[in-house]
Image (cartoon, rainbow, N blue to C red; front, top):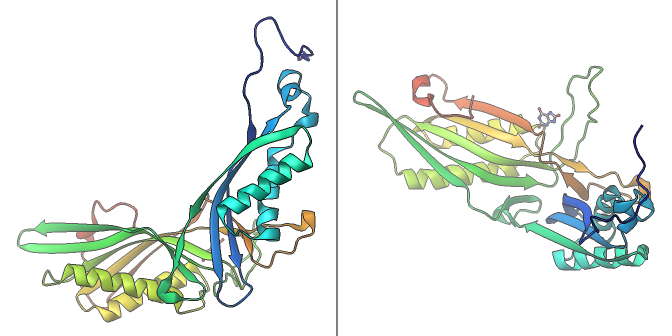
Length: 303
Ligand SMILES: O=c1[nH]c(=O)c2[nH]c(=O)[nH]c2[nH]1
């Protein structure tokens, strides 16, 4: 039988500084009041301090506001008050927890914000304001040279004009169909040239432009469809490219269910899950062009 400890202090130890809470709540709040959406993307950590002695020393949880409640509050506040700034959002949380629970006398609230820029001033398509990583590989085989260019970590998001429906269902399928969801991915792509006579910098910029523009210009029925359209546009615009590959995570953004506090959530407040993620990979090839499978040897992460 487990011993129940009832001693608050012992001869040997005392409880020192402590705090606790829920770390890294990834909340993506879309303001959809007009067709020109606004996005705030925050990772929020909430930690409470106060009279928490008995929680630690005698297993009495009467003062232990659950970390789960802290998480629920973060998402509920994002929906209810919006996110005017990370600082204002954290101040609202601090006032709430210290006001709601009299033994909570302080705490620590922290946020990291990911900033997004509009793609071509688009109303609901965004690219994270960080640079992608450019890649290049040259394979020599005798006199033959094959150049494969690419990039990774180009993070994009569309806050509407994406859905996923019409898929087969079996007894393990619980995913609801949707006609309006966030679609977001880190684009990783590599493309193979059929010549070395290329202005590689100029083509690189144009391929990136085509991929970004394609991301914005259609209702996406699946990430697979969007990758195909991106690849098709690149191959059609660039006769010097015979093949392009994509490997893209489907970065799930789940609409947060705020029914527990009677808050409607019309695709505004999302939980951005980091794993598991869908992993969508595809190769788009110029019809009739010779394949160069050997050139891809050693390039990991693409099918
Ligand atoms: O764009 C998508 N493609 C899928 O294959 C898929 N599967 C899933 O659960 N969600 C999605 N979304």
